[in-house]
Length: 92
View: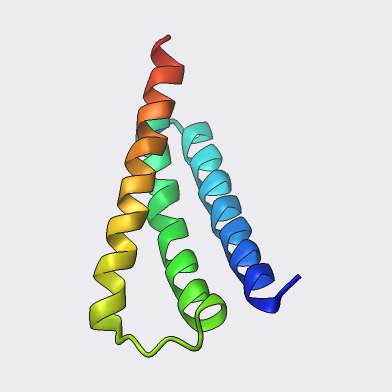
């Protein structure tokens, strides 16, 4: 497996793990699942951005001013899908 694919998968797994652990702990502490999910995303996003920026895509020439808004947009779109699935799972 190419190193870049392994880096991408590793960073994604680390960020997903962070999201999950923070969301589970937050919910156990009394937050609603929807709020706990937001908190999990907020903690996982920096792990994802920094990990991908410095490891998965370390050869990029894009500045942070160019890359960050694009990365945030894609991450938020994915999160909104995640939040919608969570809502559906909780209500149906």
